[in-house]
Structure formats: structure tokens, C-alpha cells
Image 1 (tube, rainbow over the protein chains, first blue to last red):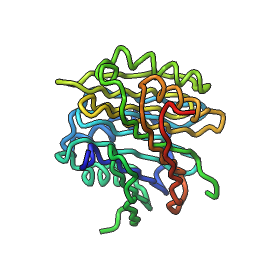
Image 2 (cartoon, chains in turn purple, brown; image 1 turned 60 degrees about the vertical axis):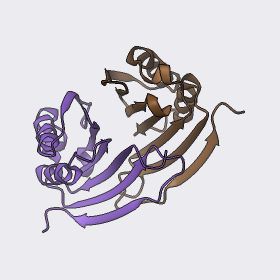
Image 3 (cartoon, each protein chain N blue to C red; image 1 turned 90 degrees about the vertical axis):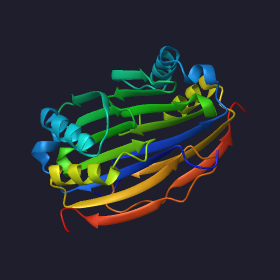
Length: 131
Length: 131
């Protein structure tokens, strides 16, 4: 197995709109729209509100999955984009989510999945919403 | 935000039983049993068979999520255990999945989620099924 089977991006989104982060019904269309903008094929999805607040959402796509977990009290969301297809535009999905959540800062780590040996993580960081 | 909000473990399982990896109906109870053995509280779950083969499964738990994507043709499964609770026994879940899939080799990477700056990944590797 010489090449990776999938690319998995871990995003930490800080400074997000807390009202959005506690509303599964607002996050569902935001995430679904982002996935579709990135040419993802939605298979099924789950969004769940936790008590007292916070949302977990997972969209299973033909290309693997996109997941979000939110901490409204910290203005924070953890997002995963896991894709076995190079046709999925992960950057587009990330940008849609970042803008939709009004994140002020995003930290990104990307990893190959499906290799015998751990790869070197590629890490980058950027300010959300800045050109 | 000084301490992480969650711990995310990425597992690469090699040498798994290909018959299991192509059968969503076999993987569902295996993964659910592993989550419950690790004291996870299941909220909902999705398991989907892809054509011609391969399964994507996600279990949303009160503690966040457990996900699997399989490549039967490579005897390979990628598993994620994402938990915001230290009460979730990630090692127990990993061991149940590893043994259930009859993996010959497991690579593990664990990351903190929800910190302003990227942490150093903790990486380890072990042979599956060996004491």
C-alpha cells in the first residue's frame, strides 16, 4: 500500500458565533451546503443537540464523512473532513464552514489515512475570514 | 482555553478480515459492542455499504463519535475515536475493534482537539492481537 487511501483534515475553529454553535437546525444546512459546494455526495446525516448545549453532527458522504462537534461556551468547533476522493474539494468545504460559523481563527492539520507507517502531519494556521 | 476539550484517536488497522470489512451488518454490532464496552453512551448510528464494497459507519455517542471506513480489498480499516469525556475508555474500544476485525497491525495517533495551538502528536504502533 504505497499511496494513502484517504486524506483526513482536522480543523479547529475558534471565535465562532455561539448562537450558531448551539443550534443543530442551523448547523445542518450550513454543513450540508458546504459539503455540496465541495462536490460531496451526501449519503445520510445526523445532527444532535446535547444538553445543556453543544451539537454533534456527522454527514456520511460517498467520499467518507464530514463531522462537527461544538462548544458554544468556548465559541469553538472541531471539524473533520475525511475523504477517499481527490475530487472532493476540502478547501471549499473548509471555507464554507469557516465563513458560515464566522470563525476568527482556524487551525488545520491534514493526515494521510491508510499507510503502513505514520506520515508527517502537515500543519498550518490562518486567520478566519481574511483574504 | 488551556486544556483540550477532546481527545481524538486515529487508528489504522491492517491485515483485517476482508469478509468483515465488506459487511455493514457485521460491523454494526461489532462497533456498537466496542463502544458500550468502553462505557460510551450511544445516541444514534449509521452504517452504509458502498458499491462494489467497503463500509462507512459512524456512531454518535454522548461523548462525541466513533467512525470506521473500510477497504476490504486492502484488508484495511480507518477508525476514529473522538471523545470529550475522560470517562470513555478509548483503549477498551480500540482493543475490541482490533480483536473483532482480527487486525494484524495497528497504528495509533492521538491528538488533542480544542486548543489554540497545535499539540505534538503522540504516535505509537503495535502488533494487533499480541499480548
